[in-house]
Length: 138
Image (cartoon, rainbow, N blue to C red; front, side, top):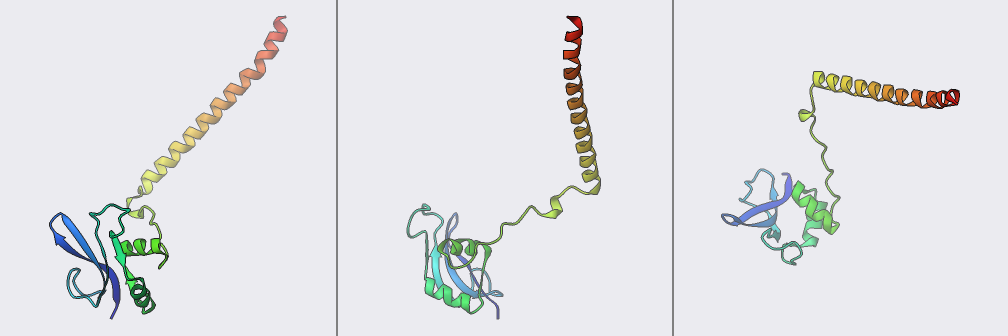
């Protein structure tokens, strides 16, 4: 049996209230759970003391038994120092441009670099010739 520490939703429509519970991962979200560990009320202001209440000793116990917190709870528990913060995910590779689009981007960048270098050389060349022309005019 794999145990998860997760949120179980309660409250009425558009007025959520969550219980923090230790539950078998196969159980429904709002269904059977093993133990209630705390509560989370997102309707309260962030600095309110009752927004997120938890029994830290019981959470430590379940973590020691191998319970895995959900990503949202891992973020909340990391603020209390009970678990490490979840790794921030990079943008998925699925949304990255495909091979042809990447080739076109590389070609554009190379053309832009070449144009910038040519402009820099063109700007440097007349600057060197200008003083020589002024000297010959005198």
